[in-house]
Image (cartoon, helix red, strand yellow):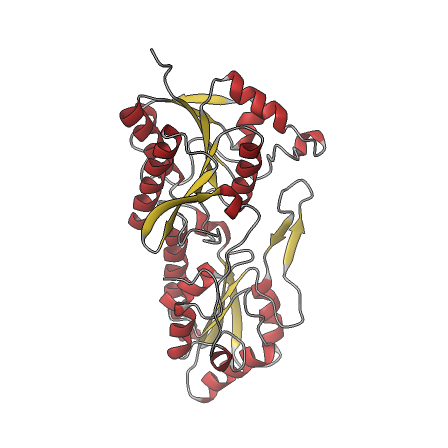
Length: 375
């Protein structure tokens, strides 16, 4: 009799709404469709390093579809190729040996660009891996959407809606700082949905003079308030990103944050209106996933289970042009998908009068082409 399929499962990097939905889909699909055993690793790759596991049964994952966070826990520092608790030592060979000791046929890693990069390297070393794309930033290449993004956009949009009323009441400029690191997808989508007057994202270095001009024009035309949405990785032309702190033991050592306050300080000297800044921070990553993210996460999880059962390793599940597919992990590793200049939503925002803080941006779009256009 053939041995039962045995699959490892982990959630790496930062948390995001929909992680539990993937855990549920992977586990139930493997048990029901392939009579498999599922072993969960606690706290991401740290579970593989520190040998912390928990079996996942059908009952263990029932009732978790709507829950935020991850029942397995996660860790955004436990890189087996540079383990922070051992002075940056490479413990990848120990990780692979442990996975083989457990008799795993493969490991499904749910995470963002860092997780996919680690998964690709482990796969190349002989540990069969399948990836599931997760990040609220929506910045993974080769997939049009990552789960968690829709929920984050909904949270930010609601915050903008609420700030509209206080901005109108006090005739203020309200700056809303979003997450997004090096890509402006959250700020773009939520800014358009929330009717922001200015959207400032990492892809377009903004002109402080242009931002001030837009606010002054609104003041002179009797529009007594302005909503500015700015991504944490945005920067003015010739300036630097706002780095809150640096963590040497992290795969991505830069912790961004505070660009909203930088912009506020610069604007206050140039305009009449009062300026206030709201940094949404980790609230964007928490709470119940939207219906869209639940459905996307469930589809991704079921497809990942099928890839493992079919022994199609070294791949990440993805959605492209509305169709579910898979792509080589090597295509995703160490790359970031940024908002292209000619993205349809950028053009739509410009058409309704939204500014990106870049003079003559609309004119410069003529003939421009980019990768990863938003739908």
